[in-house]
Every structure is written in C-alpha cells, then in structure tokens.
Length: 207
Image (cartoon, rainbow, N blue to C red; front, side, top):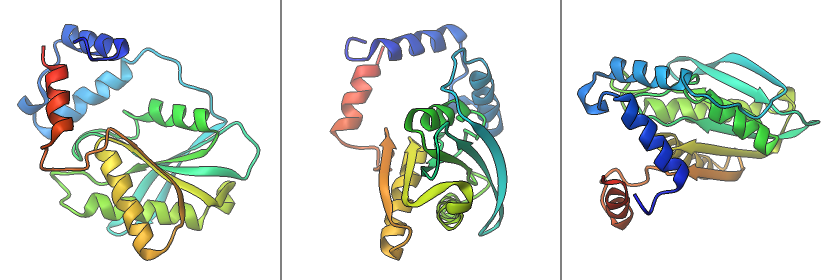
C-alpha cells in the first residue's frame, strides 16, 4: 500500500486483525451494530469542547435529533451543520461523536450533528429533507444558540458529504441560508461510481 498515508495503513491493519465481517455480508441492523462497536472501541482523546446537548427539532416527517457541541470560545461563534457518513444506511450521532467533537474543538465553532433518516427504511429524499430542515433550524435559532447567523456552513464525510453538497445547492436555490462554508470530506459526488478517482483509489487500496 505504498500510496496510502501511514495512518491509513495502520487503520487498515487494525481492521484486518479485528476480522470484521464484510459489510456486504450483513443486514443493515448488523452493519450498524458493528459500526457502533467499532466506535466504542476507538482509543483516542477528542479535542475539548465546552458543552454538549441534544435537541429534538421539528422535521418534515416528525422530530429530528440534533447533538449540539459548543466550543470553548466567546460568542457569537460560527456554526457548522454536520452530516455523518455511512452510505446513507449506517452511522449515527454516536459513531461520529469523536469527529464532531474534533470539528468543534478544532474550528471553535458550534457544531450541530444531524441524526437524519437513513435507508433502507426511509427512502429518498428523506435524508435530504431532514438535512435541509436541520440547516434551516440552526440558521433560524443561531442567535439563541450563541452563533452568528452570517457565519454558517455545512460539513460532511462520505455520504454525509453528499448531503452537505445537496443542502448547499438547496440553500443556494432558495437564497437562504447564505452559507459561508461547504466542507466535503471524501464526498460521494457521483453515484455512478465511475471515473479516474475511483479507479486510482481502488488500485491504491488493493492488497
């Protein structure tokens, strides 16, 4: 694996030693349980945050759960709405709690992690509807949360980055909220799964 960063090589080594079941061999509930167990086994210290709180906010099909992380900084602070990865099927506020804490501590921004609906139980566009509703709620309540409504952004990884990109487009078309940040970590931007980037990644990780 010469083209991979040493940290990624170490992650792959640990995963191989753990003899995890292939995700394609599991049902969605089984895959979720395995991911939750992997997250609990993570041994690292996240960056410190000032406060963590959960809120239930109104959504298009019922309530949406948010986990809010406040930084150790005087307000009003920027706000980032965060969407976790997991192929739109697995992942949760808990599996990505470490990521959200580091995002909050590293940026000194309020982070709102979104527990959007996932498949296969909830079909398209359920995840998008929840994600955009959460962004609009953070924008509407920014001042009461100690955040600056003129400094709001979206962030996501993998499938969550796809959601972040989609809600950024929805916000652009609606002309609200006015976003100042779109941060996408290995985004799923082409569900055809074709192209040079996919080919090169496959070759680099084959072992």
